Image 1 (tube, rainbow, N blue to C red):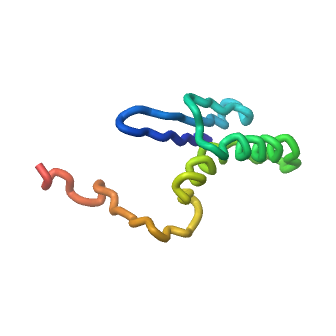
Image 2: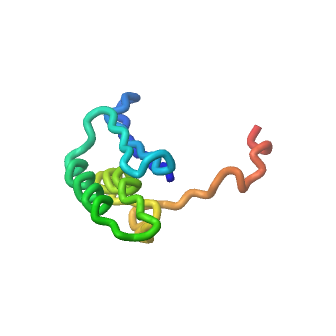
Length: 100
């Protein structure tokens, strides 16, 4: 249960968000200055975490790095709207040794 997102510009990391739910559902590492919208996303997810009645509980903090990245890129890995993105084939599917 690990999620993270970060933004780099000109070789410099601007911010990073990291969650390790296997250690603690509430854990959220924040480095740098996350983008606008992060505070609202975190507040909403923490509220959902605090009011969750599911058994076993749902890890809503897992979504904070992913939703923050989506607020910038419009992309989230588990959503099907790939419009504007191109899927690339994984290099491991090819015999890599032929490239040498």
